[in-house]
Image (cartoon, rainbow, N blue to C red; front, side, top):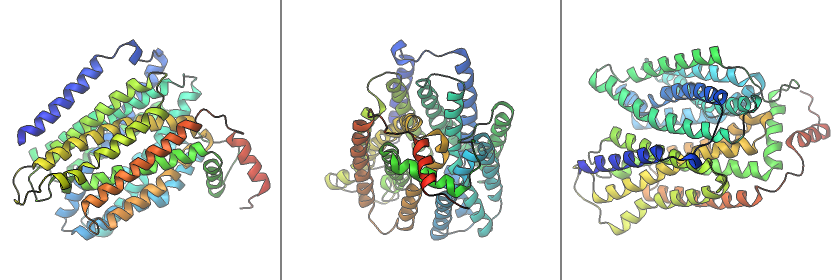
Length: 460
């Protein structure tokens, strides 16, 4: 069965290469030299930031287990990370809008470097502190950088369509190629050079330090709404007004939470799904295959977003339906394929079919990221972009914490079925977003905010 992995990886690699090499003029967006320089600078920084993140992922659980912690204690550490992102994410997002996005990106680097340093200690309290710092850093990674990019892109007067070029390339590199190379580099450090499970975290800290130096030397500062001094509560209220008053923003937040919640649940479920009887599967190689599938998705997205039609609001409906169907495969194979009762051995026929479905889901993930970024740049008001984006992550983090806490309470097929339902609902909400996307807003966000502040003044 080992050849099956190579066939899937090779097929995906060939398709990605063919798509990239066959791009014609209609699949490309004509840009300026100034924009290309700006884009390449951002891609360098984003790739370094993602390298710092991807290097840690495969070794967090392994490191905790080598320190002698059991499944329950490790689960609590993971919950602390997501809980920290939920509790502090909105605060750091608001601070990014108020104090500056560049400063928030530098804070991400410092916070994540400190989190990496804590991995050298086997003490549970120190590791818990590291997870809390990591949760704060994750919130900044998925809000501050995108907020800085959109604001700086607009400030420099570049065309709106060019944003999709940067988004697609960022996902292709940061969530695809860099993820694969990070996995291989981490494997080299731990297995080939025998530097121990802490080595990838030290390497991650180095990449983050280099990225921070590039940010500090080449990025300019931008803000959400610098017109007046606001406290955090006022910013929270303004963001809530924006979400409640604009159905497009509310729909976008719900869609993002449903998809990302399913995606993070999938991260915890794919290993037991492919090896229910402790089959020997190459986790690192499968992870690299998933990332290659994600690259395929981002390559497809770059073609779609480069054209005027279909718009992201339209084709994402199909993407959500395909992703929902792909996560139904574990349920279908459990019914139609007789499960193997042999312990150990290589991957089963059911596992092979599920792996193909999971690669399809990862391709949908690759399409999702640049598409949702493009829609967020259109609908989320600049004044509170980071705050609103972290508001979106609150239900996501609650959902993931609940799943982690109850991961052994439900059969794996039930968990996949729940994710599939969420993705189907996301498709319905995406349909609604497409219907109202072209409708003009009755009044802009700023006027609604001012009107509300006049009606209910805050004395804080």
